[in-house]
Image (cartoon, rainbow, N blue to C red; front, top):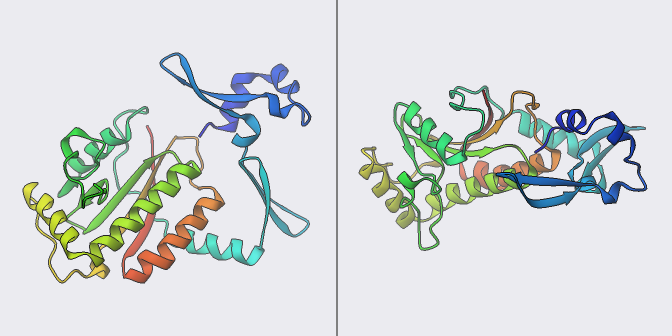
Length: 250
């Protein structure tokens, strides 16, 4: 998620003056990998903004304006903020790091951390069910915590993060065969198997957003809505303790 401050500095004042409301469609944001352009997006779709105006709450997201009910806005924000906790994990070893590599570092930094990130070679075989779903990125057996991690805080990444946590939490509770499969992975990794019958109230689902030093510890409102819907209607209802935290890059 490019920072507006970084973008303004890089493009410079003269170039910014060329951008008007009328020609905004012609400017693009490009993704550069190893010196080559890959994907690109219209600039207007990359602008996000929230504001109160004349007693109303408005949000600009992906090129569209939305008016949000104040009571709903306050309810969602209150629900999310009540579940944000201070980070206790170490920062990644470097400022540019792959998500799977950070998950490996995180698992090794915990007293009883077990890696379940299917994107890492060390845990590629630790999937669940015939659809090869991911239980979590890291399981902390010392605190009974399912840890789900995303680098950045774009809406699409966070939606995937919350959906993954919601699905795995419920399937472990509902399907004893899936729980047995997870336990097999745990035991093979010198972990202690989760006791049965499974009691979700004894477990925490922790969502982690890894952000840059200059990024705000906040996420887009519509991502909070996704969190609200998945956690409140699924994980909370299932008995889990659900939390959210930020890890800041060095």
